[in-house]
Image (cartoon, rainbow, N blue to C red; front, top):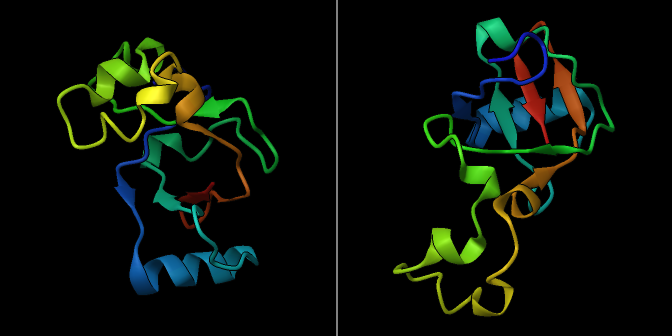
Length: 110
């Protein structure tokens, strides 16, 4: 990853682990809120609470953020669901805002 400009998020936290992370951040669970583990080399990322010009992308898909939603959903069960949004870019679709980050414990919430 670019030094401190991006973060690797190898795992989404679920269940009790997610609930504990949210409690330690002082956040309540809500629809769409997610918590991820920060990779050890990503703990010093320059992100802070309130940062909003961020997007999630698979590490092994370099042009993912520039692809259209149509391109990504084509041939899947989601194709018809998002047919009216076919021109949206994945960078917009996966945009997130940081609502909490704990560098010591190694997790981040969006």
